Structures are given as C-alpha cells and as structure tokens.
View (tube, rainbow, N blue to C red):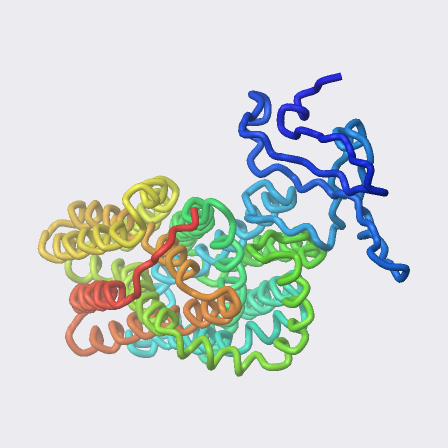
Length: 496
C-alpha cells in the first residue's frame, strides 16, 4: 500500500543473489508534510558479514528487511550522555528561569551595597571625624577584594562547584554586614568593605558568565544588571530616610543582612543540581566526552589557564574598559551628593535622593534600552551611549542649578546603564569558551577595581581642591572607555 515514504524512496525488488542488501534511491520529489522537517534522520540498513568472522551490527540499529519495515524504521534514541543541546535559553533547561531569578536577586543585593555608600558618606565622615581622603579608603578596601578574587575565583569554582561557590561569596558578604551593623572602629569598616568586594567579585564572575551564555544574552544581562540598578535605587532612598531621621548610619545594614540570607538560600537551591544538568553547548557528543575527561586536569592548573587568558587581547582591553566604566559609575554614586552640598548648596536631607535618580536611570536603561542593542549592534550601541554620557557629564558640571544637575545625572545613568551588559555580551563572543570563566572573572575583578581607584583618586583630589574634580575624573574615564572599546577586535560572527 503506497504511503508518503514511498514518494521519497523507490524500493527495488531483490535479485536472485543470496541475501542481497536492500537498496534505495532518493527521489527529487518531497512530500508536502515533510518540507519543514529539516534534515531527515539516517535510516540504519542491514549489516551483512563478508566472511565467517563477521562483525555484529551496531547496537541499537534497526534492520529493515521489507518495504514495510523500512517505512516503520526509526533511528535509535540517543543516550542522555550523548545528547548535547545547542543553546541554553531562559526556559530550557526548566531550572534556568529560577537560576536567572537567583542571579537577579544577588545583583539586586550588590546594587544596594554599592549605591548606599554615597548617601552614607557625609554621615560616616561626621561620625568618625575623618577627611575625604581617609573616607576614600573604603573604596580601596573594595578594590583589593575585587583584585584578589579575580585570581582565585576559578580555582574555587573548580573545587566547590557553582552552587557552593555562589553561597560562599554570599556568606563572605554576610559576615561583612554583621561587622558593619556593630558600628566598629573605622579600620574594621575598611576590612568589611574588603570582604564585600571579595564576595561580590566571586558572584559577579559566575553570574556574568552564566547570563552571557543564556539566550538572548543582551536581554538576560540587561535584566540581571537592571536588578543591580533597582537595588541602587532603593538603597539610597532607604539610607537617606534612615539617617535623616537621626538613626545611626550602620543600622541600614540590618536590611542588608536579611537580604543576603535570602540570596544564600536562593543560590543554593537554584544551582545545587547545576552540574547534573545537560547544559547546552556547541560541542558534539565526542567533544563533550573529551571535555569531561580533561576537566579534572584543567582544575589542577587554573593559574596556567589565567596566564592564557591574560595573553588574550580581549581580556586586557575588557578589564581596562570595565575599570573605566566602574570608575565613573562609582565615582558619581559616591561623590555627587558631596558635590551638590558643597557647590550647589544642596540640603543633605534632600540631595541624597539624587543618587537614587542616578541608579533609577541605570535601571531603566538596562531594562529598556538593552532591547535596542541587538538591532543597532552592541559595538556601535556602546559608542553612541558613551558619547551621550560625555555630553551629560559636561551639563551636570556646567549648569549651576541643583535641579538641572539632578536631571542631568539621572539621564547620565540612563545612558550609562546598558553599557555594562552590552560589553559583557561582546566579551563573551570574542573569548574562547575554554577561558571564558577565567577571563570574564578577571575582567570583572580587576576591571571593577576601577570602582575603587577612581573614587579614591577623587577623594584625594577633593581633599586638596574640592569635590568639583569629580567631573574631570569621570570625563577621563569616558575617554578611556572609548579608546579601549575601539581597540577590541571585531566580532566576525554573531551568535544570537
């Protein structure tokens, strides 16, 4: 009885030769219902010995002997270990969406931690009776934590796995918060910020790699870093509201303690079975097997892998780019309030909310503007955004009005926000897969030290000349960003 498969294969009757192998001839005609199938699966044909010492047919192969059996034949179902997906998406594997939410919660907590410092600095200076330059040591403590974490994150990941490494990073930050809520002597405050920097760098490296390899990467990274910005909005509002009511600055960190406990629970639950999932890659089954066999050897030689990553042009220029980006971002967040108080006669109880406007712009930009990046192209998009931030920084410096400055700073955050996730997308495309975690960890760690060096430099210069130096420092950071971005190699093949 004719079937659709007969229109593809013409089965010829066997000749008088003993045990002839069935043959088939492909027809040029393709049935309507199979046009969108793609590549047809191979059909296993009979395997016959040519001598007495015959070999056995492949295990799992079906041997059609009649046209009916040929029609009914199907390729064997691949084993789970051999099935390798092509790309991880936000809902495949199913746990991915919960892992993305866990990453967003961690970014949210990190955003609160980084943004509240600017609102608390005037009150911390008064409490400890210290100058701008001494106050800037908290940024140095954070920077040292970031740099040290850049060298050890990948080795810790190889020994503990993703879930335990994420939990470790959050536990380290929880310990720092416990120190801060006790309102310790100022040297211990600097130590606490060192722990905050170390823990944040560990989570930043792992979450950046995970989100950058989840399709669509620009959108996922935009959501993740948008969550960071959302935390950046809430923390200055909460911090300013507390200290303006006469509550001690350190009491804000009780909120941070509770939030970090939630981060520990979510990361442990969402990523606990991460290594057991068949995570999608572009490897074939044979390459995946080879990769698993060499993983143990690579884990014992992470520092050699770091050397390889440092020889890559993308790692160096990427770290310098993030150094400048984080330097500008944290400098504005940390010193804009002091600038408005000193040079625009701003009310400390009110201008503290300008930082919230800045982080609100960052959040909105990461949630909204990142969707335009794939259409324009991440490379050109970052250039346009950087030029815009340069112009808005000049406006916030030259317009002698608190309201005008506040609006300019908010718009500055709007354009600055999408730069980081777009840059991470480009870095992930340019870096080889075998050094991605190490290289992006170094970029995030060493690069983010700019979030300490630039604010510290601003504090030193402000001690000598005034907080107006914030603006030329940020303009210099934007120029460095542009130079490093142009120096990056071009992406020859898009992956989204």
